[in-house]
Image (cartoon, rainbow, N blue to C red; front, top):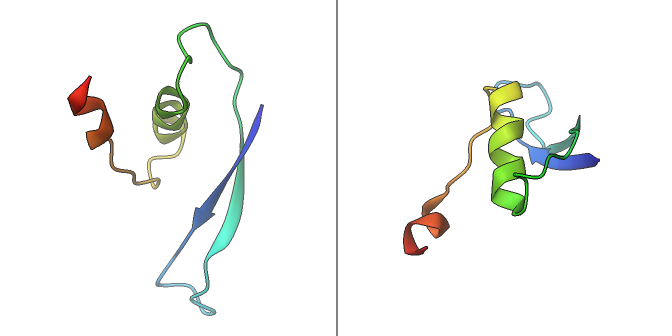
Length: 57
């Protein structure tokens, strides 16, 4: 499945956000979008996200 992430690089010349696509093979453990986002973060260490929503579970 293809996911698009809005990315911002302050060191880039244009300093405008852009889209980067990530192709992820979904697994049975990817029942929530947060699981997929954490998988993308494993592949692309420059991705940053907050996951405090899982604290309430």
